[in-house]
View: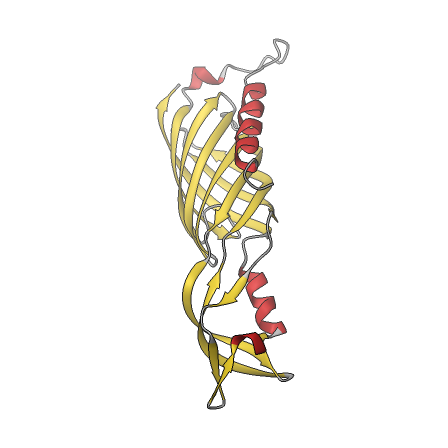
Length: 219
């Protein structure tokens, strides 16, 4: 079920961008080509559950006068992340731009961390090695763009990231040390508080972000 997701999303993005090229002859709107909209964007962004993570970069290409397809990468609380985003109604005016995208948060492998575990109905703090498996999300939202005279874009993003697979976190050790004794992993589990913490740092949920997009090569 997971393998067809990315090709399908790419198909949707380019289908929507093709639709975005159509302009009614009765609108009287100035042709965006007349104000030399940038063709390429290099972006830097930061946010919570954001496509760029806590800090990241993007490379955008204007596939139509009002549509941009962007590759994003960055580092978040759930490890490095990469993704693809389509941004629509992104012409030369300030306004709201719908967006939809796909992201993969790579998680961590062999991460040494202090975690809280449950053993014999009691909670204990232990230091151990864990694995956080990758998580996939579809990100939908609205982007408020502010266009400078040079065609650069400053954006505020609001949206929601929908998880596509289950969060899987496992111990990387065969046992953990509890009160001077090594307890086999099959006899312990992450505590309720620890599980809630892992869910909080995961990449799904409400998203909020800021980005600045430097434009190059006018149309």
